[in-house]
Length: 625
Ligand SMILES: O=P(O)(O)OC[C@H]1O[C@H](O)[C@H](O)[C@@H](O)[C@@H]1O
Image (cartoon, rainbow, N blue to C red):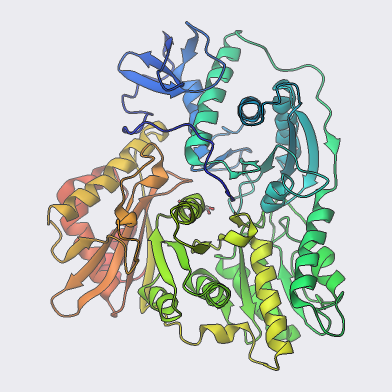
């Protein structure tokens, strides 16, 4: 999740290869580490064949470090979030998001934010105020105590928001009466109940991947130093956190937006009177939207699903990309004759909807719907999306006078690209990922699933007031569906600590094979029909340390059909695997691409030795996954 209204506060990342695992060292080796000052303000740690950049105050000289323990904390970085296994129960995965690790990371964040605030605001004596929210995961309360302890140890005042949503955490830094310096949300979004994680916000928005990498680095060093009896230890009396009710204020903020913008001629305070809306919160944090927003505005929400928070997620994965979540919501919409169905993910930074006729609207359709709404408000604006969208979506946006910038997968990447375009003078009002993360310039560049739905609800009511009974699905009449769209995965067959390095190697070999012409008819896709001319899709990988910077899309042609599809290759942010997406405008086009990919790339490069290519083989042979 996200939000950024101003340039990132992160220190510049050196242009170099991944700074982790380039020269993997034997597990559990103890070694002396020399720390010296780097000219740009970071410190660098040099060991035999290994150099790492560090930031912060913890610059002890001669710290004895076990690489393995520290590396486990470093590996908790997942793009711009921290994610890990918090509970036993996963096959072949052990618990790595321990209270000790979480405490070290929270303490590092507390220190980082204190240093930055002092630098930015020149207020050395003010205590930093940090809010903490969580989703209903059962590991939440225990890890929450570790977050409080870490923040308190860093000298912060801690405010406990209890059950919250990710966007509400950001809003706690800007809403009057709260305005905290920073916020932490504990969530692992749609991942299984065994996982958990952390998202970090300042008033400028969500932290970037390189910021989070720095935090994990700092935490890894703290953790290992503590394990060796160096530095300040944990334990003692659990710190007090002040309990606050942020969610009520946030819900009121959303209600005010709906009332003001609809400005209903006869019932201003209950503009949703007469509308039936089904909410499916998937037992995550989204139930509040039903009773604290929709009901209070007069909507009939009878028939809503899975509103009670339950950290075991007993019904289905809380995810608008999940087929069960969408189809159950569709069934409820049709059964109750509702005007709209809403599906939230666990922490409500994403959503999907169902229209009154039962059309499920997520992925490209949701982007198209939002693009249509935003393009009416801001004619000619640019829309940034990840590069897994269809060619038809680009046509849909350009036909409405908009510009489509295709960029990297990963919500933070997409949002940051929009922020950068605006900064460069390219008006960009909408940034959306196919996963359902949608950020609007008008709303702090924050990807808020509830705000997204607020925009759609306002549109729905306005249409009714204008005398139309068509419903919001009517926006999509001109959106064509791709003939074939497939996602396959290849597990990386190495020890976890080498997976990122091997994954990056595989993705970069893909790029090299195409550039060198080994795959006839395949060409690296510079930018789709995007008008941002410098070729951002295959751009200069400005943060090459982050795995979510390595991804390429190839346009694919053959002699019979000409250009008929594309293939996109990248490393998963969450798991040690490579994700492959492809689309084609001809039947059998994806199978043909899978065959070429297997024979002329995977087998020819020898990568099949480090990747599990079972899914590719199956698709190449059978044309189904
Ligand atoms: O890399 P994957 O496992 O496919 O997950 C990638 C996705 O992870 C999360 O859902 C993030 O919120 C998305 O921004 C990202 O695209």
